Length: 221
Image (tube, rainbow, N blue to C red; front, side, top):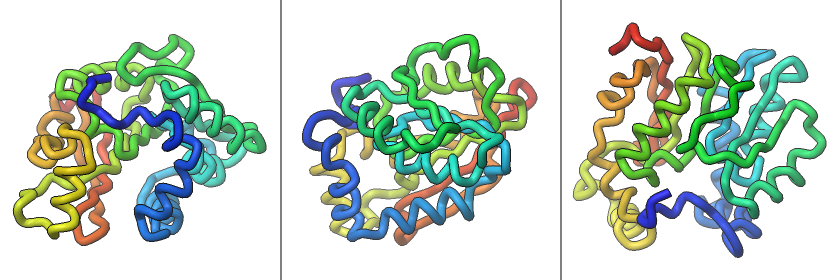
């Protein structure tokens, strides 16, 4: 990935990822992500789910609980540190598979048209525009027609109209790509690849959005 990105987590951050995320969210993240997955994501019993950037495996466990034993959750990541942590965390869930794979590279043939749902959380903003295009092209290969693609990330907004603490975080602590993402035309660029917006939820004073896209393949282009 681009040198301007911070989405690949290793070392200290990987080791204490749960703790850091809880502190940074004022201990709201566990309740928040559970609501997003259980209330705002169209997971049915038996759904096959791809998590693009599985991280520590916390989200994968929630998905596995919702899809049940007849479904499958495959978490893709490229950080060895996070993969090791995710495998330890999810070892009691036989319907979870953790795979080392870059979302910027073509997926193995066995996943062709396999997934009903794809989920990406705070990774999309950390891709260069050309990397976003590559990621979406690869993603289409593994999705069934009519599949849902969920993006949890920063909302597209005018940075100058956001709270001072958010401006400080985006400008000083996040990667440069995050600031650029705020003006990125998400809906237009996804539609080019056959993904049509069907739902959107806003959280944390509209600073975070959770967007549901339906993959209609060539019909939407």
